[in-house]
Length: 323
Ligand SMILES: NC(=O)c1ccc[n+]([C@@H]2O[C@H](COP(=O)([O-])OP(=O)(O)OC[C@H]3O[C@@H](n4cnc5c(N)ncnc54)[C@H](OP(=O)(O)O)[C@@H]3O)[C@@H](O)[C@H]2O)c1
Image (cartoon, rainbow, N blue to C red; front, side, top):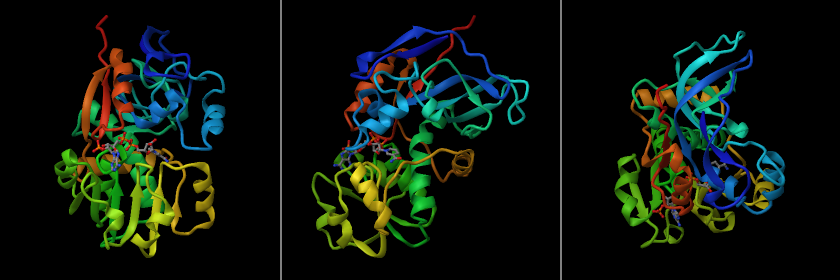
């Protein structure tokens, strides 16, 4: 099979298309014929080893100290089950699925194997494989922080800083679905997009500094990494919460004692993916795709994501040569 080879950390050039042996599922695994994958901000951080302060060593220990432990990068997948191991009960051949390989990586490929209990479920019926993969990274992150951690309630005021990225576009829609009144912060060219996703107001950060306004919020989610608790405390209601998803180890440790600060790393689960599928099928949430690349163009896709200015998601469309 064809897949992206990743043998060292560095610039996008470290990624190249190569021939790999097609994997064979173990007795409790499924073999997925991948039709779409993604390149996320997380994939780029991992490739370049550019992580928030204090996370370099933990990340290297988790993914490979001197070189990547996984030979193929990528986390999000959508495709069809091609075969199942003899003990698999949850999936059958030809099931259409979407999910994440998590820390195992290996999604930027024509095929991958996953344990049947992994974060892998039936894909939403009403969208393409490309759209399905595009909701995973931002959707699961939004779910973890806004629903599970901040427990957003109907009528609350929520501000999303970085509302036009993968996490931002999913967060605006999820917060709106949960009944919040959402304000999004983005640049001029993304105002229309953010409002179309359900924000009652989009603040253009190139023209206005929202931290100087007199508005207060029940929840502020910062996906950009340019806000601090000291800066935001006056913008929060008495019970208000600041969510920093792109911050260093010290702030993460501070969040253990500060009740109004939420940090950490989003996880992945079948329940989260099922929840997103239901929201997509009911039309409450949609995937925002900026650009689509072929598998062979993965390095180019990384270069674009590295700019930090994508709108929503960057997808890899995986075409299989008929044999
Ligand atoms: N802790 C966790 O578990 C977790 C999970 C997922 C992601 N993350 C991290 O969260 C960050 C965001 O992820 P993502 O996938 O959403 O990134 P992304 O899609 O690359 O975000 C890019 C967006 O950020 C906007 N942006 C850039 N500068 C801005 C500013 N000063 N103010 C407002 N918006 C600005 C850009 O809009 P313009 O082009 O208009 O500037 C662009 O649309 C990444 O660093 C990622 O590693 C953490």
